[in-house]
Amino acid sequence: MPRTKPDITVPNLTGRLALVTGASDGLGFALAGRLARAGAEVLMPVRNAEKGEAAAARIRQANPSAQIRTRRLDLSSLESVAALADELQSEGRPIHILVNNAGIMTPPRREESADGFELQFATNHLGHFALTAHLLPLLREGGARVTTQSSVAARSHGVHFDDLQWTRSYDRNKAYASSKIAVSLFGMELHRRSVADGWGIVSNVSHPGITATNLLASHPEMGRPRDTLAVRFIRFAASTHLPIAQTVDDGILPALFAATSPEAQGGRFYGPRGFQRMTGAPAEQEPYRYVADEDAARRVWTISEQLAGVRFPD
Image (cartoon, rainbow, N blue to C red):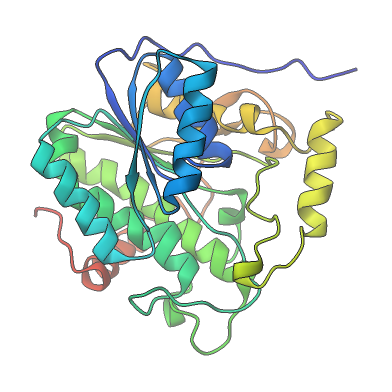
């Protein structure tokens, strides 16, 4: 018997400004579409301008009233992150929703960002950390909800503090897990600091379970010439309604709930409620043990401020 398709009701977001990273494809694209459908004005910061404009056009085609714009952003470049933030600061518009969603997954060989950081750490964590820091005044003005996208990979291995940049021995899966745990710890710590310092920001963390996105698809530019066996199996499982994988439209629901629902709270962890938390309707769940480690969160925060050259207010 096919699974009952989950969904949530998104409140009216008219007059709200939302920013979704990684919105030209996959989960980010679907999230941007749902937010626009609910009336939000959506910014899609993208690395590839042509791909981003094509994605925005697809959203407008499905919803002609959608207010959606692209901006230039390479999360792996701290210069690019600062440039986007400066642009938005000069416009001075409060941001009401920020979804730190973009990511890359398991390049077969170790790659470095323009700033010399391991590429997964730079893109998945450090870029989002720096972007949120730079945008903090606009987020505070908007009383923003900040939702950070985690991964089931955050269940394993922990943050690789002994060698954050994986210069000694690169393990693509552990490096991916380390980067996603780091950004998840950041999302949880952001709420604690907001409460302590009166920033007025609500920050939470979500994960999409096992979702058929293109993270494991072919990326010749990263040394992956063909789709992995894993992504082919996940696509098959999602298309045949096996309870171990789901489509993108289902996979966005935890982040969509965390970012928009009046029931979603700060400092909480949201994911699918189904079998092994891999599929199903969104629900609050216990954070993975590595994500719940407050000492590690403070350590990640301090290191990230040093590496990114940014500071949140004390």
